[in-house]
Length: 272
Ligand SMILES: Nc1ncnc2c1ncn2[C@@H]1O[C@H](COP(=O)(O)OP(=O)(O)OP(=O)(O)O)[C@@H](O)[C@H]1O
Ligand SMILES: [Mg+2]
Image 1 (cartoon, rainbow, N blue to C red):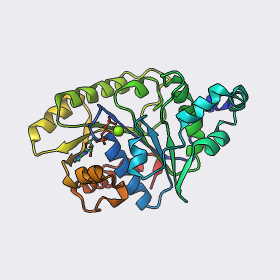
Image 2 (image 1 turned 180 degrees about the horizontal axis):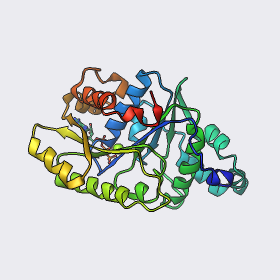
Image 3 (image 1 turned 120 degrees about the vertical axis):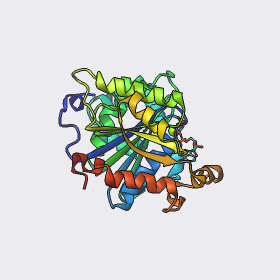
Image 4 (image 1 turned 90 degrees about the vertical axis):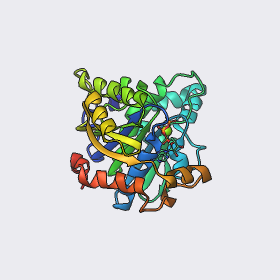
């Protein structure tokens, strides 16, 4: 990726960069969407990054999913000239043109999509890492919804975020994956830039204090909030509504917005 790869000052402008991770199905996408909605409501220019081939974040923002980084990577493989152009370092301009979706004036979305060519995401992850970094400079905040599991963490796609929300539901396997994430962060090697803040979010919570205590102990992470099981979220997904249509007083949304306001994480990177 040419000069961009050597650029240490990767995000001089986009000060608040948050990602969600965790086991499959625990609520990463819903929570990423709630964070994105809240930051927009605060008037921040937000770049939403759907890093999951299932494109759930895009659906929750009602986005047309025809334009993806994966689709663009497929084109690259078929067109050596385009590949040379990308390698020449114009990656930002090219990605803006080929993959950036403008939801409104201040909100952009990049959808990773599927990489049909190899069945492997290495190539895309590199484009994500360097290209997205350059695009993010035009925004105040970036919210990344990761695919399930630990692959993107291991490949350091998330090497330069400053807030990592590790999501778990109330299952032992959810907490186990959260602990594995915490271990990757704790043992990160020298060139892995650690998030300023990594916190645990228990989702679909039903009153059970001892579960929360165990989850904290087993992961060693700060518990940022327990998002209640919420009928409104279920209905939103059932009827294909967008995150904007979730009532502002839905208990789950209130829990996520209170966490953002009270946990101090919005102060990382001086986002306020
Ligand atoms: N707080 C909640 N209350 C009720 N239902 C919820 C809640 N959070 C998530 N869900 C439901 O759980 C399901 C999984 O949520 P979501 O798609 O956000 O998980 P995910 O971790 O992104 O999954 P995947 O690993 O497949 O990407 C969805 O049907 C969603 O509606
Ligand atoms: Mg998801």
